[in-house]
Amino acid sequence: MMKKVLLAAWITAVMLNAAACSTEPESNAEPAGVPSANPAADQNFPDHFPDPPKKYPSETAAQNGEVVYNRSRLANLDKWDRFLNNLKNKKEDHIRLVGYTKEGDAILDELNFNGTRIKYTHDSTRDMFGSGIKETTFCRDLNIKAEESMDDGLVYVLNNCESEEIGSSFSFYAASDDKK
View 1 (cartoon, helix red, strand yellow):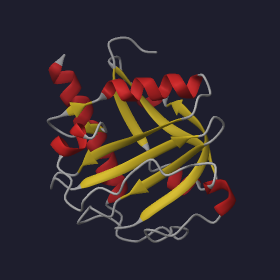
View 2: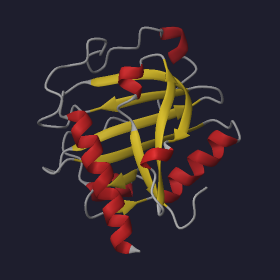
View 3: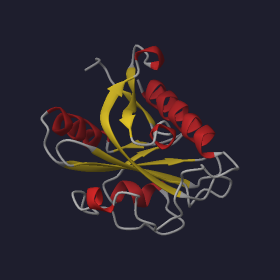
View 4: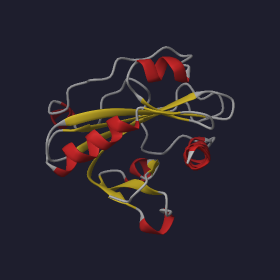
């Protein structure tokens, strides 16, 4: 079982690393700290996430209660399950997932659900070889991507996003003993 969890974490890290390794910034990307093009929509999404330090070790992220996944560690997966349950019940919730590149740089994915929409922020500003930008979009759905899911877990992706380009950078593999 531990090998499966580590494999799942490694696969997810590789997928996020590939998505973050683009050398060109997205054409519709906003620099870090710039509000979205729809400021009125942001008012329905309070900022739940303090800005972590530039160097953000997995141990610190896990202690802060964030879902952590890299080649050797998977922490706080129960928070992911809680988020999915709240999403299903249309209850407001938020979660930060922290993945790591092979160099150990943190890549942050924040999902903030207001009961109807998901505000998704992908932050690669800590990735030495990534795009170095923080991008935000608003999405309607978080779905299981059946063609990438495996017997021991599910791949979750965002759909119906204002910016499909930004929304498509999110993919999370959650190992599970039984599919939900």
